[in-house]
Structure formats: C-alpha cells, structure tokens
Image 1 (cartoon, helix red, strand yellow):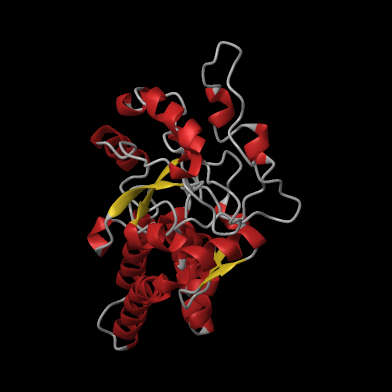
Image 2 (cartoon, rainbow, N blue to C red; image 1 turned 180 degrees about the vertical axis):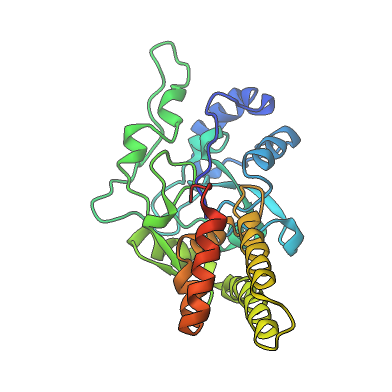
Length: 286
C-alpha cells in the first residue's frame, strides 16, 4: 500500500453531473440504487492516479484481479453498524472513490470500522441556506469525517505513511504495526499475497546466491561478481517506482537491505554485498 496524491479539484466530468442523483440519494438514503459513479472518465482518471494498481494490495490487472471503482466509505450500509444507512451522500463524491482490485473490493465490502474514540457521522450534512448541497462537507478532509478515525487506511489521506502501519518480513509476510494496519490487512485479506511477495524476495536472493556461487567456483572474478550484484540491486531499484506492483515492498527491500539479503550470507560475502549496495544506491532517496 502506497500513498496516493489525488487532486481534489480534478473531478471527472461525469461526477460533476450527478447533483440530481445525489439529491435523490439524500431523499431515499439507504434505499437508493447507485448508478453512474463508475463511468469511463472516472475509471480513466483513477487508473492514471493509481498507476493502474489496487489502492490496498498494489497488484495490477496482470495478476488477474480486475480493477474497480471502490467506495472508501460504503455507500449503502455499514457492516459494523446495522442501524446506519451507509454514507449515501458520498456515493458520487470524488474524494470517496478509490481504485481497487476485485478481490480487495469484495473483501472490504461494506466494512467501515472505527478506532476507539471515533465518532461515526450518522447522516448527511445539512444543505446550504439556498437548498444546495454543501459539497465541502463531503470531502475526505471535512473535520467530521476526519473525527471518525477510520480503521481502514486510505492511501489518499494527506497524512498517510505506510511505514507507520505495515512491515513486510523477509519471508514476504505483511504485518500490521498499528491498529489501522492490522485491521486493513484483516479486512482486505492482504496476507493472501504473502506468497507473491516471498517469490519476489527470493528471486533477488537467489540471484545474489548464484553470483557468489559462480565466484566461489572461480567462474567469475571479484569485479564481475560486484558487477552482477550491482545489476541485481538495480533490478530491485527498478521495482521502486510508482507504476510497478509491490513498489512498497521494493522500498522496504532497499531500506532494510541487511535483513532482507545481507544477513543471510557469510561475513565475507556480507561485506561485499553491503559495499556494492552502498555504492549503487548512493544517489537515490528511499
């Protein structure tokens, strides 16, 4: 999961034409049949903003899970509060729409648990004196929505930092280190991808092992060994870009290179790995 910057004023045209639909939703509340929030222009903009990756698990459509428009705050009901009509007033709100794979979307469903001390917004904010919708109260930054203290993390939150909520172990396991991280993993079933993450880590580890094995057999000299290690580190770095799946994992592999890789080798090999690593990443900010 990575931080995502979505311009709140870059609203897709189709959502700008939804005032009548919002008005009907305000009247019908939990009974309203939501249609038209996932038009082509909405999907196109979300795809670009999210680099065609899931907001929660960072997979893309090449992994077989179709990407869908997801309501961060559920639009029709809330699983944790059966008396709530859902956040029906946010059904067409741009800042409430994320991009998620079908698996995370289905797993999240209508879940929206709150942290201790959070105050759930029970109903839509009142309209303005002229009867128009007060859309400033619909945005993610509205103080009443902020004070809900959601347990499911939102990558569009201005204060979101994944490193405060998750760690990934050298075995590929994702672990929550905050209540929000733990609940997001639980609800979106993010540990279903532990095997995929482990496969990526072991792919790089195996290549390091092969380089050292060739060196021990005198098939390559030390300069060739260091060059091979450098190229493998550069492959990890190439994953650390916004448009690649699991870029958060790549960031952690680079930031915690010793625990992911160096510490698995003997002391003399570890020295070489760390030396090449430092020289290779000298000019990048992790």
